[in-house]
Amino acid sequence: MATIICPSLRNSVASLCFCILLYSVSVGARPATFLEDFRITWADSHIRQLDGGRAIQLVLDQSSGCGFASKRQYLFGRVSMKIKLVPGDSAGTVTAFYMNSDTDTVRDELDFEFLGNRTGQPYTVQTNIYAHGKGNREQRVNLWFDPAADFHTYTILWNHRQIVFYVDEVPIRVYKNNEAKGIPYPTRQPMGVYSTLWEADDWATRGGLEKINWSKAPFLAYYKDFDIEGCPVPGPASCASSTGNWWEGTTYQALNAIEYRRYKWVRINHMIYDYCTDKSRYPVTPPECVAGF
Ligand SMILES: *[C@@H]1O[C@H](CO)[C@@H](O)[C@H](O)[C@H]1NC(C)=O
Ligand SMILES: *[C@@H]1O[C@H](CO)[C@@H](O)[C@H](O)[C@H]1NC(C)=O
Image (cartoon, rainbow, N blue to C red; front, side, top):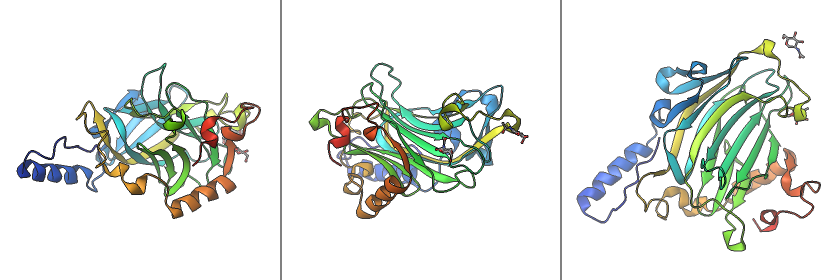
C-alpha cells in the first residue's frame, strides 16, 4: 500500500491528528490490491487477477510473456511482495522484480531476477544495481529452498544510507551509500516498481545451455501482498529528505547483528557469482567493493 506522507505537521493540532490517522490507515496491515498501486504494461491477456485483485497470476507461453508496473514512482522507501515462482522445469524462464528510474542514459535501477532451472536444480537469484547509468554489478545466489513450492517475500529497501535486497528475513545483498568516497548512489531520481515474466533461454540457465521446454507451457508465477511504502513522486517535495520516514530510522541504516550473521551465511554458503571478485571482468576491483561495509 502506498504511504501517504503528510508534508507539514506543524500547522495545527487538528491537521496533525488527521495526518496521523491517514498515515496509520495507509500503512496498516491491509495489503493493497494489485490495481490500487499497479497497472499492466505488457500483455493483459497474460495477467489474471485472483482473490478479488489481492493476488495475480502471470503467464508465459509461446505467444507472450507479460509485465506490470507501479502507477507512481517513489524516492526512497521499501517495496516488497510475495512471489511463488514457476514450478518444475522452469529452465529458460526469467521472473524479474525491480525498481527503475526510466531515464536511460543516467538510469538508476535495482534488480531482482529469478532464473529458472531444470526440475530439481536450484533457482538462481541475480541482483544488479545501476547508479547514474552504470550497472554491471551482478551478484548471484542459489536459493536454499524451492521458491515455487510456496510464497516467499522479496524486498528492496532503499534509504539514504543503504540499499538492501532481502529474501524473506535474509539480506542477500547490501550496497552502501559511499557517495562521499565518489561512488555513485541513487539519491536524486525516483524509481517505479516493475515486474515481468519472460523467456531468456539464450543466457538465463547455465549461461544459455539449458533451453526452455515449451511442452511444459504455460509457465505460471503468482504474486500477492503488494506493499510499497515510500515517498511518491509527484508528491510532497519534503518527503524524500525527511528523517522521520520509518525506512530512514536507525534500525534501517545498517544491518543488525542477526541480519549480518544471515548475510554472511548466504555469502559463504549460497553465493555463486560476485562481480567484485571476477578478475577477468574487473582486473581492478571496483571501488564500491572495497569501500567498506
Ligand atoms: C541451475 O542448476 C545448475 C546445476 O545445479 C547450477 O550450476 C546453476 O547455477 C543453476 N542455475 C542456473 C540459473 O543455471
Ligand atoms: C520436454 O518435456 C517433455 C514433456 O514432459 C519431455 O518428454 C521432454 O523430454 C522434455 N524435453 C527436454 C529437452 O527436456
